[in-house]
Image (cartoon, rainbow, N blue to C red; front, side, top):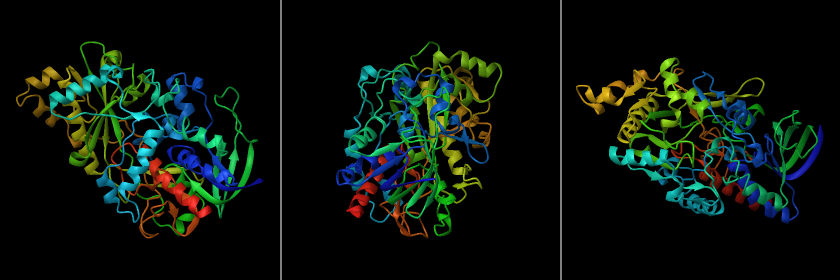
Length: 505
């Protein structure tokens, strides 16, 4: 195993790691060595050809099919230069003030986070799409919300030169999405920060990490690693974990830090989500243009968020409950389908946590609470109302019995359409394992707080009892943030980097 010495090593290159890398470039100018390790490869825009199954295998851990321990929920997270910022839709919202207040982390104020968030809003070109770039799937959502009594808000997105491929979740072939792979990491590298890809961290020691650098398989896409394949021990004055909720807690647990940190791995939340589709009489432009331009925020009132979305046939088929003629009929109607993504704002509970098995592989225990199920049921009813108000004639709703909701049949029922929706969509019909639930907003496991009795880190990402060890990713969240976590992760990572600069000075 080869020894390498640096001043700061950052594990991960996503929203957290990429932000830290750029913010630490001044240390390089001062004569220090900063190194970023990324487990995934470095891809070119031309590698993103939009082929669903190939792209999923290439860009996501376990091909996008990582399952919770009981097999009921799929957890999606990217593995590439840029982390999950390569494969998400670019939606960019600041943290709600009430959420940060509820976290009650000493020294962490909403005003500070908001100021840092605004910096990255400007840096990553976050803006509202002009009206001419809004596709029909999104327009129907807005119309349906207006008619059904819901307020639709437009998503700010971090795009530059979007050409409407709708391939956001499979890597943008046009280089439009301004993730860390397009903004923070190139700036960090131009400032002298080193990035090594295909580098899997297998353990953490006192002021050091152990790494295995892999070689690309024959025919595999992505650039080869910047280092020779093999094992390395990287010694550093400062170690920053930005491997995400699926990486950072697991690395710490596997490396033996759990004994002194009883809260390590706890507090996992994920915004469990599933797709609803509404079938219209005519074809609509659901796979052209940016897929996610509007949302309904009912987080504070009812505990859910609705988002416009567009998923390609493979993922859509996986998310539609059942099989046989009914399933086939909806898939044949794909060009006429309007889609809504339902997200429940779950809360941290004692039984939901991240841990590791004997081999050090991350294992996630996650069960839906009765409260979370009720939120998903309420969101399903709201979505069905929006679909029908937008003109859909049929809706496929997994938590309904039966799952097929026909507008004319519902309207002819004794209580009318709305009463029939309430009767058919009930919590008792939500059966884990029967409904295809996934999650991409993975949070918690290294939560911030006062001390080791209630948390893993402080409000600056410092691991309790190990001043040389920091965390800078979504695992810092003490509880669900209720919205897309991207900008909040960047703001927290910026705080972590500020603390490192001060300590290194």
